[in-house]
Image (cartoon, rainbow, N blue to C red; front, side):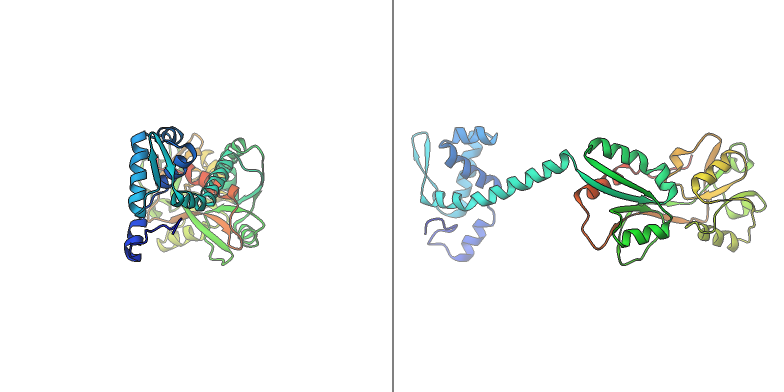
Length: 318
């Protein structure tokens, strides 16, 4: 029958085996040959050699088990089967062109509004440069940038009031999709010139009686640090409680004491006067990208998530 993808003498199993190897390139060759009439013209249109066109046509005819063209001199005249198959392929290629055009449009730029939320340290020291770069690449985008404590951040993401969030706190909320970004371990920030700055690694016993910059009790990292110090029977001399890692680091730089923090994202942005050393036993952290579970992320949100992943380098002690 004209337009069938198997020859009349084939068993169904044999026809399926042959047809399973048909490639998109072979079908493109068929379409171009019908449009242009010669292998030379089809090769130019596809950007391949004339021999490659002939080879792919032969492969397609072999897979289908039927001839598709009548050769008249240099011209290839499509038969009824070729014309029928080509007609069936038109919507397929139209769909592929539409998909390619959509992808090109997304790559060229996004428009609309993208709402991003993060806790203070991440919002102040990590995300701004990414937002600037994203806005420059997509000038039609408007960014809504919120800075919230973790509890309010989780609620906002779960209620889909924000497109995406970034935090180093854990959430098991069923309304939130979490995507791991980077895993780190706690470090000690020490004033340059302090005796502990000469150590390769700092432990709880080293901090006993030392002037200490503690994180505020509501800070997501505070409880894990307290547990490690309590288990070791260590009592640092707390002189300041700071609500953010950035503030704690500033007090260390001023010589007010030592602190323990998550190195992400501040380790590469520390001011002069601070020495960073690993703290043991390890206190583990994982930063996560958060997305509302109630809706699929927009193309702009996916693009921003990709930019976040591309920007991350694992912090290293120095």
